[in-house]
Image (tube, rainbow, N blue to C red; front, side, top):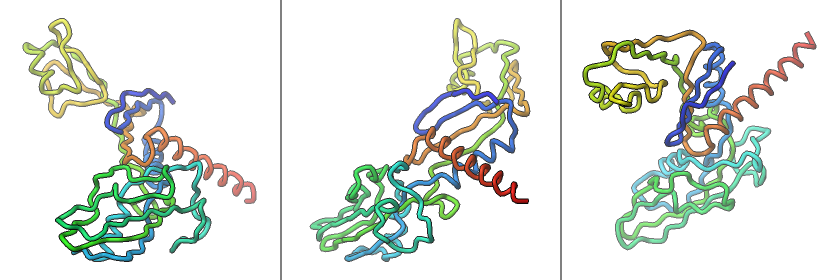
Length: 256
C-alpha cells in the first residue's frame, strides 16, 4: 500500500491511497464515520425556556452542536448511558444562562459555558433559539463521548472516496487559458501551455486532447472534519479501533 497527501483545505484532507482495494478503503470510511468517538451533548435539563421552541427542539439543537473533543481525558461509557452519572472520565457539563432580554436576541452556541475548557463548541455562532423581549433561557447540558454508530451527532465528519484520475494532456488546446478558467482546481497555464495543477480533481465533461483513465487499486480518500477532531486524528482513531477489533477476533478464533 502507498499513501500520498494530495492537499488539505478548509478541514478536508485528500489522500491518494494506492496498491489497495475498494473494500479496504470503504471499511476505513465506515470506521471513521461510525466508530471514532467524539463529544456531544446527550442530556439537557431546561430550567427556564420561554422561547417559542419546545424543550425537545432546544435539546435536539444542542445535541447537534459539534464540540471539541479530548480523547486523552475522556473515555466511552462502559455501560448504557441514559442520564448523568457524575463520572468526570465520561462526561462534562455545559451551562447556559440568558436573563430576560430587552430586545430580540439570537442565543448562540458561544453562550454555552463548559466546565472543561477543552470541550467547547466548534462553531460558536450556531443558533440555539431566538428570544424576544421579556423571554429568558437557562439550562444545564451534559456532554459525553459516543460514536456515530449510536447517533449521527457523534460522527466526526464526512468521508468519501473515488478512483484516482490519471489525466493526460495529449494535445494542447487552442485556448489553454479558457480550459484553466473552467477548471481552476485542475488546470493551470505554464509557458502558454495547459498543465495539470491538482490531478485528484476530474473534469465533468470530455475535453478534446485530454484523456482520463481510472485504475483499480488506486483511489483518492477525502476526509472532511466537522471540527471535533482533525482529519488526521479521525484516521488514526479509526485504525486504532479497527486493530483492536482484529486483535479481539484473533483471540476469539483461538478458542474454536
